[in-house]
Amino acid sequence: MASRLFERYKSEIKPVLEAEFPKNKCLTAKLEKVVISVGAGEAMKDSKLIQNIEDTISLIAGQKAVKVIAKKSVAGFKVREGMPVGVKVTLRGEQMYHFLDKLCNVALPRVKDFRGLNKNGFDGRGNFNFGLDEQLMFPEVVYDNIIKTHGMNISITTSSTNDAEAYRLLELVGIPFTKGRA
Image 1 (cartoon, rainbow, N blue to C red):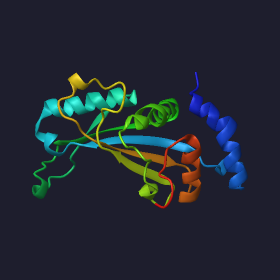
Image 2: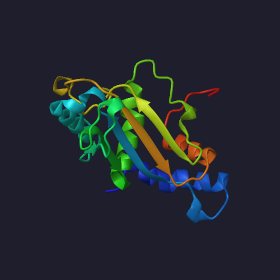
Image 3: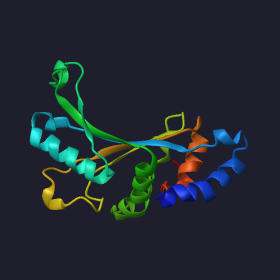
Image 4: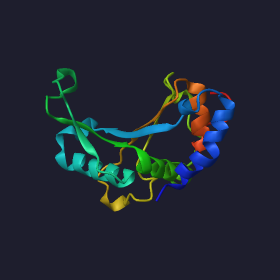
């Protein structure tokens, strides 16, 4: 069963992008992946907290999250090689479209005083990054199961090579951007 957002992309969004950015139809911008990541910070030394973060991100993404392990020791950050320094999950295909649909239509509208995502999150190559302050906006998260609230970084990778095309794609998908100047 295909996601509503994916069906909408094929029927409505792709023809609009092809008309606005005329070039080879195979080069029309599309979503490639979404990466949700959480830096552990002071949780590095607490395995229960890392496990709780991993479980929460897995619940939000609908896919098993993995611990990110330090490859090198960094004395300035009190990090040793092999320590868990964060949690991440990469979503592609059906789960990616399902997550973006949930993010745009359920989670972001639940944020108090939300005015939209900053347009400055583009990296110059058609990818968009933004951060969320806490995980409680997602309906799957049960407040009683949370040991400590944490934020997360969400990175949306598109096949576009420029920010203008990627911005238009994400705008059509339903990502709420701030109105007016940057």
